[in-house]
Length: 511
Image 1: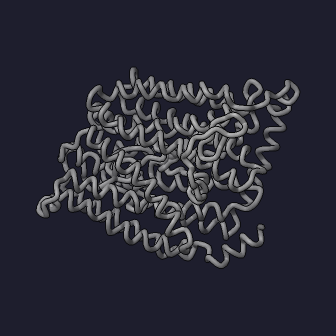
Image 2 (image 1 turned 90 degrees about the vertical axis):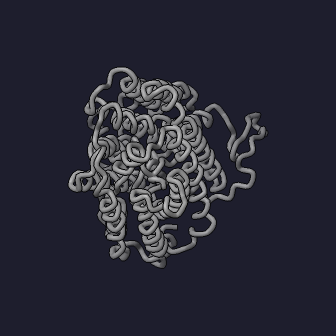
Image 3 (image 1 turned 45 degrees about the vertical axis):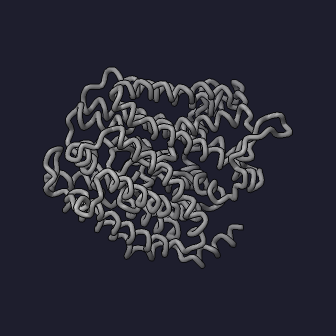
């Protein structure tokens, strides 16, 4: 019984635990985003569904011996076919940090519930608020490209992002004692991850430019593997640390993790701009002209019907409400699930998400997008109804304990959720015209994140309307049913998606 997760690449979260059934495994992300790990289905977290193009590409490459670490002719050890040079090590460690930052997600959930005594609706609002930095990712790219700091476009922003993340979690560990302070600190942490995510993505794009498809895929695999490993590590320790040492301790430990991003920034192979180049880059007229040109190109692409209509579908598909916050309160307050147990569930779902990507890669990637969306939406909605069995206790009448029902439900829905979200990445990649790939892809992921945030806020409103609180769960089954049935609403709009034949023709035209 997972409550899904994405992502995100995202938002604090990121880069959020459970989306509607279809996205349950990808709301974190982190997430994003990006963390490569999936939160237990009933846990407050980031809406970071901000997965990126790299996650899709990495799994589409056939990785025979991809995990081997050997020594190359250049003298460097290799992993996933990539030389572990200082530059590539910096990239891998930044992705690892984005994954391992999931360590604090359970702690935040329990802190909001037990220390600040918030209701489910309030925690859902804070979760959505903390995801706002993931909605404007293209802006970070404009800033990094156009305004170098101390002569560097990448190093300086990675260092600042690391310091910002350390500062935000230090506040959570020491000074925060209100819901407004918590929301602000989590927002800063989300901004830190989102900005570093954009910077490191640009570094990967620069290194992949001009390389063969195999080399590019190997680099993407290194990034995805590093992030996934970080996510699994954080999932293993997150619950037990909260149980043993408390949430403030976990926040304090988490505060040291972003400093790894600042430390490895010095390894980035980047030429420092000369004073003349620096002055030209930061000149007001140059920045305004460059930004205006970018915005015009972006608007020209987005307003085309073959891009706008599928983007509208992505938003609506993500914007259906979910009951994740209410379920987290139910399983902890009513069923008595401990942080340690939820950490184990999170570990199971983190590994299950990788299985979901593998299933998509080997069995579904040749299936038409419309068919995948249709089938997974219906199955996901039906499986999401299993939460009603847990809330009403019917699972115990079948001889299944709450704990085992939770683990099994989480495993199944996470695999389905991850496999179901992969077509979103495929669709976003197909929509990007040559010359606008990076900016438009970031924009489409921001639209997807905006849909997730909208769904969280709608779910919070329904939770409040139905009177579901930290102690009253009488209408929780009704909330679950409404949220799961609402996930079917976008199905009549499948016609907005490009026909497979039209898509193939477009790709032929571009090539």
